[in-house]
Length: 164
Image 1 (tube, rainbow, N blue to C red):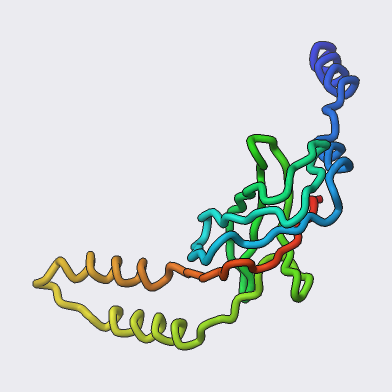
Image 2 (spheres, one colour):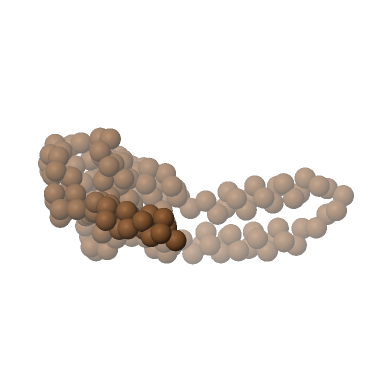
């Protein structure tokens, strides 16, 4: 018991430094634009560049520096997170300059969703026991139909803010 208590006291007496304290030296708003027309899917990267020089984690980053963010999706939003800039770790999120919300506004394509549902219904009805390849085909059709792709246009304006 005594050794366990000493172990707990050791870690209590030596707290970890706050990893977010470095964000205090980052500009509150960092202006970027998307560099070229790009098609992104979940967990793919989006290439952006700074429109003004910025202070990020205490380091001055010059205008036109490339910044790479990774995308994820929520309903009607493509979210972008930046984990490092020029090999320096950071925690930034992208916000749409037009509406101020996190990520890029993406309209749902109801026709594509309806197509997916109809295709799933048709595939569910296919039941040919003598043809085993159909199972493999259905997996390919379902997988390709569920990949969400979004085209982000050149010079689309975003604001990067520290992730809290």
